[in-house]
Image (cartoon, rainbow, N blue to C red; front, side):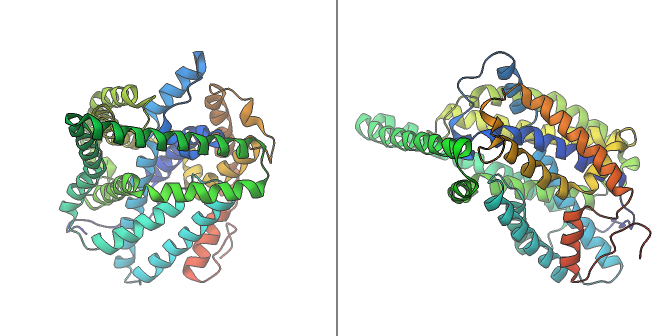
Length: 408
């Protein structure tokens, strides 16, 4: 994967810190979708937000949405590269073990998606990783970032082509009016679907919600062309960061991270803010040139800000090491977030989703994550892995792994 790469055999503190940081950002973004149906993601922001709720929602979209899944995806790709290199150094089998690991992740993800919350990312990561292994298993390191860039451009290009095609029909008012009418009818049907899903979330039983999650899953996978390419791109970018030794030897590449901290913030912030402004209330079922431009700016801002966040946290990792235990058991913490908050927000649990204002989500996310960090410190002082990590690892290697610290 890289001629100069010298694999490390020790756990890298800054990667655990980065995972912990990304875990908080993912919780912050997911809060909206613990109370809103996922299919509403293409209908723009909630129309009735005002005051502090509007400010919080806008800031989360501009500063967090699209940035933390990107960060986590880069770390996933980096983890793949590290596992492959370590296995190569120890002359141990890798591909069979890694594919079994992905199959298990897919099963965990599907169970999470159908039984707990449709916004699962684990199944998506597993499927994207299969594509990465199939198509980019032996891609030279120098090409990884180029392929990543191509995957970032692909969905944007498709949006531009669709928008331009519809715009071109304006020369024939009859055809243009018919296309717009059909799209508006589709949007009206989607609004009805979202309203029905909202009633199920607010009032339905757990079984009702499982049925709704089947519909949500069909919607998510039906729009794969817009989310699979960027995730693959971030996987490959993470692999490149490891193969180029930036993430394995950060002390030797301080200038690289300082530069990307500055570039990411100076360029990413205005691009993300501009993209958010253009897409905030946009209905994405109606492709327009403005929507294509907004999507372009937003995705570019997300890539740059994700790199800025990665660089900032890597540079400050020693001061943020309190996040490392949460990152070490990121899978357990991620599953716990959705288990707890869907039960808290949905009608089959406490049903608080209909009464908690949007501004409160920021405070709740901060408080809950602080509890997770504290618990992670307690847990990792006593055990080698988080519960979900231990199960995943034991099934991957087909052998019960040591669990309690001090026990072989």
